[in-house]
Amino acid sequence: MFPKKTTFPLSVEPFQEDYSGRLSWANFGNLVLRCASLHAEENGFGITYMQEHHQGWVLSRLALEMTEMPASLEPYSITTWVSKIFRQFTDRNFSIEGPDGKIYGYGISTWALIDYETRQPVNLENLEHGGFSACLLEEVPPISTYARARVKNEELAGTHDCCFTDLDLNGHVNSIRYVDMGMNLFPLEWHREHPLRRIELAFGLEGHCGDHLEILKENLGDNRFAVEIRRPADNVTLVRSILTFA
Amino acid sequence: MFPKKTTFPLSVEPFQEDYSGRLSWANFGNLVLRCASLHAEENGFGITYMQEHHQGWVLSRLALEMTEMPASLEPYSITTWVSKIFRQFTDRNFSIEGPDGKIYGYGISTWALIDYETRQPVNLENLEHGGFSACLLEEVPPISTYARARVKNEELAGTHDCCFTDLDLNGHVNSIRYVDMGMNLFPLEWHREHPLRRIELAFGLEGHCGDHLEILKENLGDNRFAVEIRRPADNVTLVRSILTFA
Image 1 (cartoon, each protein chain N blue to C red):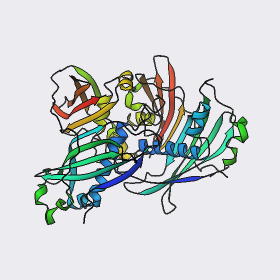
Image 2 (cartoon, chains in turn purple, brown):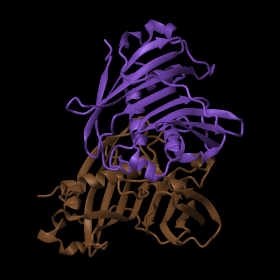
Image 3 (tube, helix red, strand yellow):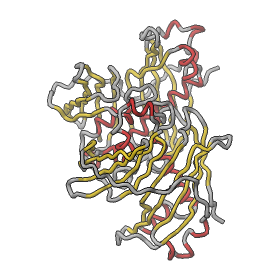
Image 4 (tube, each protein chain N blue to C red):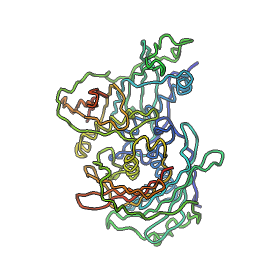
């Protein structure tokens, strides 16, 4: 009835690469979210449903792990499916493959559906007509789940002033921009030797245009770094993340 | 023999929009460059030719003028063709259309082909076998050509520290990032009332990771602003631009 898994064929197009000649994490992250959005729409829980019901999907957690990024002009695909509904949350997964069955990587994500009138998350187990439970596929990618990491080091690693071009459709700082903020704590020489292999993000409050953000970093060892992004104006954490480099 | 004009069908995909729900200028600008790159490749003067000859196309000037941007999920197309070769330069044009023949806008651009060994531009009139003169189409878009504007006002409007995620494949700051830098001089309230309608950019030296840039702005009247981006370390101008808002 529903397409449980959908595979979106893509290729690395000119101007989607980073300095290494491979798909940039910013473009990749937004393409992952694009495929999530298109799959939700196909299953009746995308933009059309959200507009009718005055609700919106909010990304709560995201982890993406890549053995490597596809290079310029290379074809690849992003496959996505939903594996679980638990009260206010649902888990969506991703696999990223080459045309010959080569696995580039995997992703996991957790989402909540927010009611715009009450500003509260909807209980996804009680949606009318069973909601999207018919499209669940109990299969999870073979990558480790979200870790917990707090930055104890209070030394400022960077700052970011949120600006117009950071904003998404909802007027919030685009989720993947926080990956850029973390990556930009490291110089070009680091990225040359240590390509980013895994990101994980836990989202708190949303950032807005004009927000001044403070970025804190902690070396967890083995080329893993916890990065926390805070808004000092109201003393809140917007994002807790872990970046793992090769 | 050569495809003089090529039309690339596109649509505004989820996560390509800006705050207004329309295609963002950053995504649009890079898609325009993508289509230029694909058309050059089709005509034998793209990435394959450049790699064989140790040469590279460098964008010298760009103007894009849009009556409006296509909205979320809307189909549109970018058509591109080359109209002129004059010594070291060539002019490439763009038209952006909706499926019903609606015109969203036009673009003009000027490029040079740099020889990586001599660091000098190649004379495009003397390429072997006539070069790409067979694909020229003497037709120019109905928009005004590049204007000249200098910023006389020396007051700093902003700064930007070039970072890893600004870089393109060549290790230079991506051309369209300079549009973001100009747009981000204006608050959200300005963009809400005055969508950006036209950009024009004249490129000087390239920016690199770690460069500290100074951004100067001058109000030319009628919602036109000259924006100049300088690198104080060696006192050079990277980009002179004019942004025209509605």
